[in-house]
Length: 214
Ligand code: AMP
Image: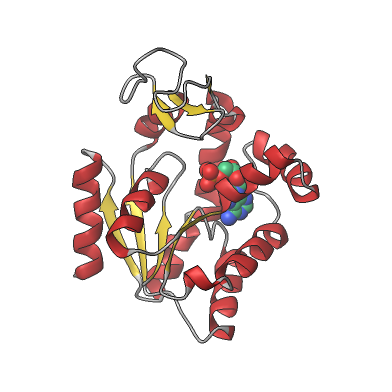
């Protein structure tokens, strides 16, 4: 199954992708995670991407399309994949269709996770991430046992630069302007199913699984 999870930052795409990996035994491909890895490793791509990411802007299409092209050619994607955070522009969606066509493949489903803006701001600005293992927490909804410390590896928790409120507002604007046109794009392709991204993580997962089977 070749799946795209579409939705604004904070909609829960990453959380839901992790559950779908288990359910369908296919990998999650998160361009955000790959870019953060490159920033941490200080690769040339990471150094280029960091300024865009810190500002809440999109990294240039050419960079992320290159990442996806390389990733989709890897053997673990043979049985399918879950794209999380890609595509984010119409140019990326067109490029994705071409990369897949060259592999004799296409997208099967696009799930759009809908959450309103105030809820997104609350979710994202309370988000904390482990500096060592990357595990995610929320100061209100999913706090660690000891404030500021990862339950799993005891490393320090931090707030991603792009999760601060001013950057988050910018990211939501970028989503509205550059990514939300993909909803109509995939509607035209008859691939889109929208679900409300509110309720417990399990309830939302159930809605996604029903949409995929329906
Ligand atoms: P995410 O973790 O998906 O919210 O991504 C974090 C940041 O990485 C975004 O705010 C962008 O700066 C960058 N990024 C991730 N995916 C893409 C993409 N498909 N196109 C452009 N920039 C991206």
